[in-house]
Structures are given as structure tokens and as C-alpha cells.
Amino acid sequence: MKIVDYIKDTYNELIHKVSWPSWDELQESAIVVMIASFIFAIVIALIDVSFRNIMEVVYTLLYNA
Image (tube, rainbow, N blue to C red; front, top):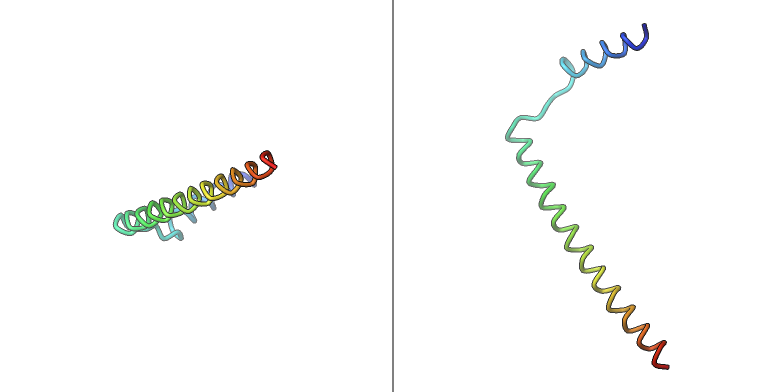
């Protein structure tokens, strides 16, 4: 019976105690997440290009020595 009690308590908490965001708040949060993800992707891409260029220089120096 503990599983049934758990499900009842979970349902009660979701319906009566959780404060759900409004549609406007949800849209604003989604926009913030999209912008942050885009900025994060650009930073990772720049780091990737930088490391690739550094490694090309290192390998060129090692193999031409």
C-alpha cells in the first residue's frame, strides 16, 4: 500500500502545492534558455576552432623539425 500512498501524495502535491508558471513566464524562460544556449554554442565553437589551430601549429612544428 505504500506505493498507492506515494502516488496519492505525489498527485496531491502536484495539484495543490506546486506553483506552475503562467504562459507568459514560460515563454520568457524559454527565450532566455534559447539565447543562453546560442551564446554557449558560440563560445564552445570558438574554443574548438582555437584548439584546432593551436594543435595544427604544434603538429607542424613537430613534424617539420
